[in-house]
Amino acid sequence: MEFLKILEFFLLPLFAYLLGSVPWGLILTRIFTSQDITQKGSGNIGATNVRRVAGTTLGLLTLLGDISKGAVPVYIAISMTGLNDMRGELFVSLVSLSAFSGHLCPVFTKFKKGGKGVATAAGCFLVISPMACFVTVLVFILFICWQDRVSVSSLAAAAVLPVAVWEAVHSEIITGCAVIITLFIYLRHKDNIRRILSGTELTG
Image 1 (cartoon, rainbow, N blue to C red):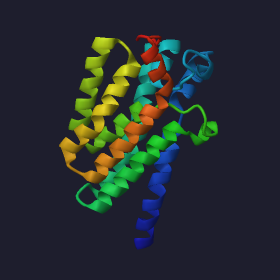
Image 2: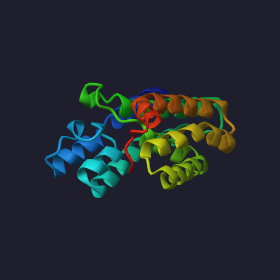
Image 3: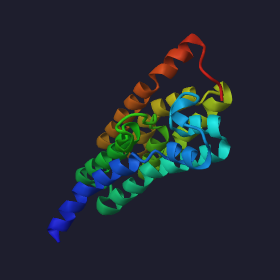
Image 4: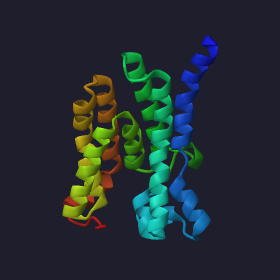
């Protein structure tokens, strides 16, 4: 029994990474359209580019798929350990980062053409702290209404995430996980940041 428990602890991060690697935007556009999403628009496989290239319905389906990549393994992790002690917080953070890493560097696309991680991160923290997720989504919506740029809204929400997580759970470990995720989201948006500063970033 103890061996099975140990095995679960090793297998869940691997499962989270593999699930995170599923390129829903690529799969859905190949099934329902003749478009190669990696060659259209920004070339990104995330929900924003899918919506722009293949329409709102596929964009929403991609968004839901990417959110689930974070939410499902994190829900399982919390069910296994809870968030009541350091061990549980470390394990949940490891599973969250594994799912997030899978989305950024998917094994199924040879570690290339990954997304920017915003939706998968949202799925992780939706389970960890619905309140923190609500705050970041609210910031996202406010910036969309103000700037009409998904990239600006994503960056604003990511910047708020660690603060919202700290205020919600008061855990150094979970907040540290949020900080790491925010840093990688910013790294993934480096081209968007250049376009924002130059005034050439796409709206919508």
